[in-house]
Amino acid sequence: MSFETLPDDETRIERERWFSMSFTAAGPDRYAGPISTHALLLEVDIRRAFVAGAWISTITLAFAAIEAQFRQVFAGDYENRAQLLFGENADLNWLRNLRNSIVHAGQPGLPSPVWGSSPGDLLGTHANLEANARRAVAIMFRENYGRRPA
Image 1 (cartoon, rainbow, N blue to C red):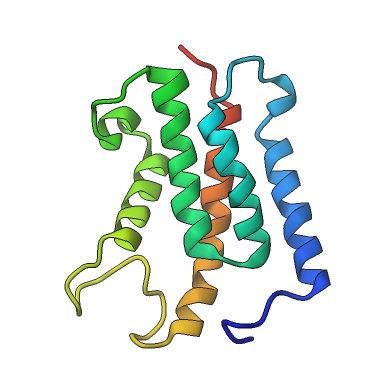
Image 2 (image 1 turned 45 degrees about the vertical axis):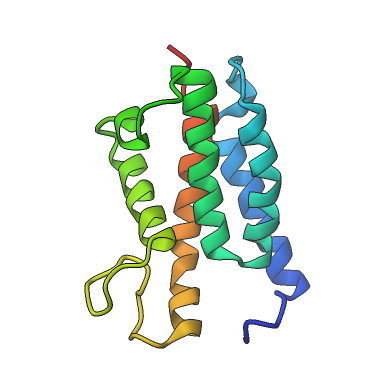
C-alpha cells in the first residue's frame, strides 16, 4: 500500500466496527455527565482519520479531545499544562509523550516513540503507528466517557 492509496472497503468496515466497539466498551451508555462540545467535534474527525488510516492525525486529535474534556468538563482549567491536568495517569502521560514526539521534531538520531522502523522507512513507520492510534482512541473513549466528573 502506498500513501496515495485509500483503504479498501473491507479494511474501512473493520476499522468502523472497531471504532464503534471501542466507543461502546468505554461505557458511554452509562455515562450521564457532560461531554465537551469541542471534544465531540474533534471526535468526528478522529473517526474519519482512523478509518482512513491517518494514524498521526488520529493520535494527535485523540489527545486534543481528551485535553478538551479535561479542561472544559473535568477541571475547568485553561491555564495549566496538560501534564498537570493528567497527573500520574500512565495512559494519558504515554499519549501526551507520543503526541509531543509527533508535533515537536526531536534531534535526529535520538530514540523516538514515533519511529518504530528503521530511519527513512516511512511506510513501515506509518504502518507501525496503527497500534498506537488504536490505543489512543481506546484511551480517549475511556477517559471522555468512562470517567465521572468530580
